[in-house]
Length: 327
Image 1 (tube, rainbow, N blue to C red):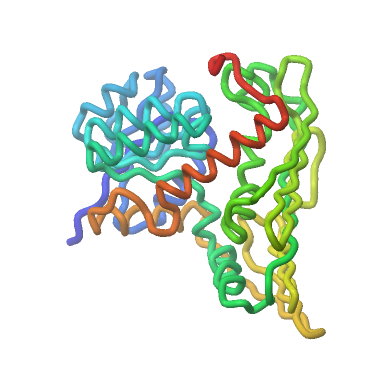
Image 2: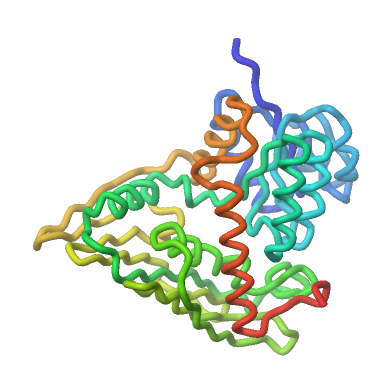
């Protein structure tokens, strides 16, 4: 029987619970450990999902020898330190996005991966979504001609959240840009690459949290209009338009289950149902890389994460967004 890959969960919150539901769908995966700063929370999670090992500190998990790879699902500002500690112990890391709060942190993470020959990937799960993979193939093959215009948004109402929550607390790297703006920025980068110029403007909460941001990414021969917000809902549909046709990713586009292609007066609706919630596909990629003894993915590489973090830094700089711990 094939040996199962042993996963540890670092930070047993809401996102980790969603992730584990998909992890349980992967035949050669098992959740063997969970760590939290609260042993009680770790035990609750372990009881819920039948996890054997529980730890009341992250270091205990990293030094326990009970896992091959960890999923880091803590607030953003803890991602870098926890990734580096896991990598130093030779443990593979799938780190929730953004991998680091800024590019300097991502550089540290990538260097640790290389130094300790341990796998590291940002959990940019939309990169592995079947619909988004197909759209990239269509665009790269010139099926819609030369790509000229891209629009993507991601917004929901969050002003009713507690100001101590990770969405609204600046000490936890709050705001839309890192949390959900990263998705539209990712799509533009995936399909058009690094822009020549970025224009951006934000609205800011009285506590310093950035609440909504509009962005224009200007390319030599194309433009992308991107938006993220906590002040209201948005349609969350992505439009990718070229000289020969256009593609619409079904809402919510970052977890699309299909797309519509309009070309030469004809419209084709393609359904691509998801297995699980959508995290399933990035888990398969992690397993493939681990089995091939790779320290990074070809589909979402260290360089991709470095580029994405540079774009996030630029947008934040344009909008005057920083966090207390960065100063």
